Image (tube, rainbow over all chains, first blue to last red; front, top):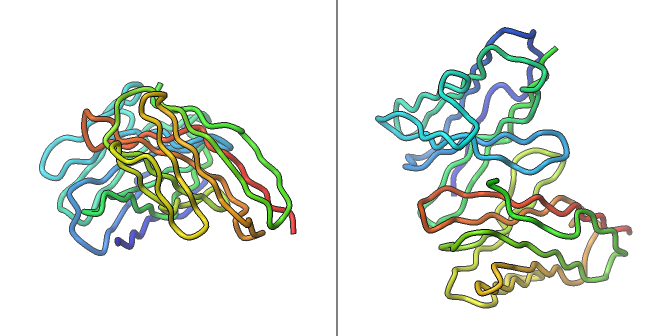
Amino acid sequence: SAVISQKPSRDICQRGTSLTIQCQVDSQVTMMFWYRQQPGQSLTLIATANQGSEATYESGFVIDKFPISRPNLTFSTLTVSNMSPEDSSIYLCSVLTGAEKLFFGSGTQLSVL
Amino acid sequence: SQQGEEDPQALSIQEGENATMNCSYKTSINNLQWYRQNSGRGLVHLILIRSNEREKHSGRLRVTLDTSKKSSSLLITASRAADTASYFCATDPNTGNQFYFGTGTSLTVIP
């Protein structure tokens, strides 16, 4: 298993600003992912955070808007840049364990005014 | 689109009844997993079924997988009020270790 600490748990931000979300895992993991979940919707994969290399982004998501860092095997950050109200969502960090199970942080609820 | 489809979107049953939800997906997969989400926050893993398996049980959960139809079902038997949550299937396509989630089923169990 894995215990994930995600910060902040919620934030209210002004349009045009940026927010960095942190994800700390209690063990070393190879695969880390960032998801977005809009109200009442399913999870959409934003990117895979690769340690030591650039993140791999899914269709519709770009590095300029969602820069990701992965400096080591226990930590990653996701930045939501130049925010607009359409970015209001829950952002979830997830890790894949050797048992092929995903473990999730408790999420960051972002509201953009 | 990343997502598979789940049905029903919402399901309301009495405590003690069984709940069945279905998932359809689009590509070949390595495995399919089911997750539960309470109150719109972090998801909890329930069960994993591999592409070469047809049925799997875990406690009150029974999962089936039909790769020819690209579909899976999750059965929760003898439901409890605590089972009230959203349930999502997630698939791991053969292209790599990314997981894509279905649209979800919102289950309400009435005491």
